[in-house]
Image (tube, rainbow, N blue to C red; front, side, top):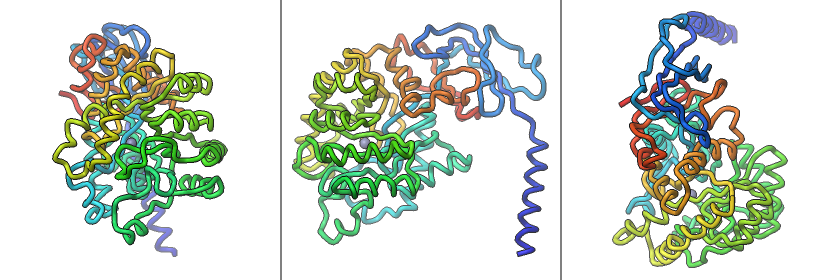
Length: 433
Ligand SMILES: [Zn+2]
């Protein structure tokens, strides 16, 4: 015991010494064009001053680094367009669909999932996404990845993680398509039936580390069942889950395609509807009444049909749903946008490759969302939905220094956001091409 205490004391004093020796890091960024607050006009020739991981000040003109005390690093982005780090509200960071996806379950350990997650997290951050919400991953591995990134052990976006989805037995989010013995073994612990079981499942998920509750209110495109895309969790289950999560200060995201399930989830008080494929006029009314966010995820609806043929992962049941959902989404999401629904950016990356998250912007613009509103959805909109607007979403004094740059103005050509050249995460320069 004594020896243990001695080691503890020694390590304390060493780290206190190294803290004392470390000076506060100051960085000055010269931004040729700066969109500090999406929704407002960009400004020219601005300086952003960072102290450690936070933004200290944003000032007009180019500040001379020599005029500031201590060691000051200059990041010259005077020929770039600078904006806040992007936020993707719907990813699955530990996997990616491939022809071998169904067999992967037999070979990929939880540890290997975490290793894959480290790789996908790295390429996601490199693409300019400094924060993500993970809506469905193996809980132990995704929480470890989240914590390792927060501790600076590996490089990746800040992750807000939901663990595995709460879902109905036999519904989307449950395991499907294998022999009964494997179905038994692999049934996620978050499968629940009836309000009492779902209340317990919500509390369990939060106990083990979920920062969000993800529910699958309706069927899903990728479950290998012919159960459609309509409501699967019942009204009493949805209501109980939302009340339980909100009691514990945790928000709820609902995967939902069919209008019946979208509207039931909105009536239950969920904080976001993800996908929203078949939303209708009643949905738009409910979104606006409750203030819930729509996370459209247009990317898989557009990209999946291109990649399905010849890939054994996509059975006939999956293909039927994918073609129908992909065709319906654009018009309905556009109607929600015109109807004034709050929108937060999301891609469902894993269904499409990680690191290409920025492609979602071009499809948002194609259905009529303005470039500025698309950027707003991936910054202020997403930060608000995360309850993180005091830390994220804009470049203002006091916020975490998550900052990116592109070569030209994305308000003129949104595909610029597919070619992010500079990434600063929590004040640390990750990439500067
Ligand atoms: Zn998803």
